[in-house]
Length: 162
Image (tube, rainbow, N blue to C red; front, side, top):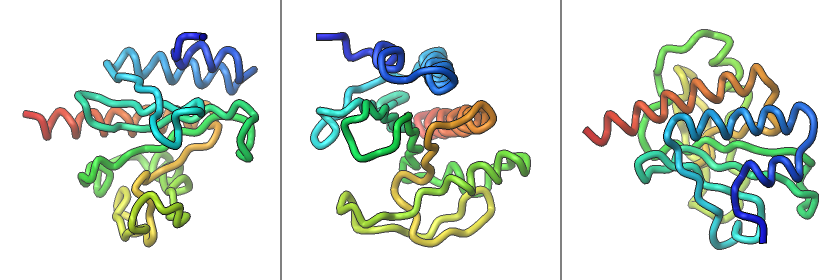
């Protein structure tokens, strides 16, 4: 069996810019001391990783190997950690626009009790999923936004663990 290393699967499943961006993102996460955990339960048979920093969820990554009814590519879901790290943090308008375009609205999947109202970088949204943002096959500009959001989340975890 192939090691459950995300980079191995990125190389085997994704191609071109998708592969380049996914590998760059994985390297960014590793450089920032994030831990990759293979998905469990429903996700155990899929190419899915929970990304943690100091044992707290930061994001999840799914790579579609063509076996699901999902589009080809990869997805990043940002976890809110049930803190308000994303509420009013000062960001430039371009980053805010990218984040707002990728708010993950509740799809009533049954994982939780349903969406909730959240303030995301100064703007109110209704019916937001527990995974507050979803980035599907992010391009270079979107990936730079995600990296900034990951840095904010990491800093939030550090603040709450002092």
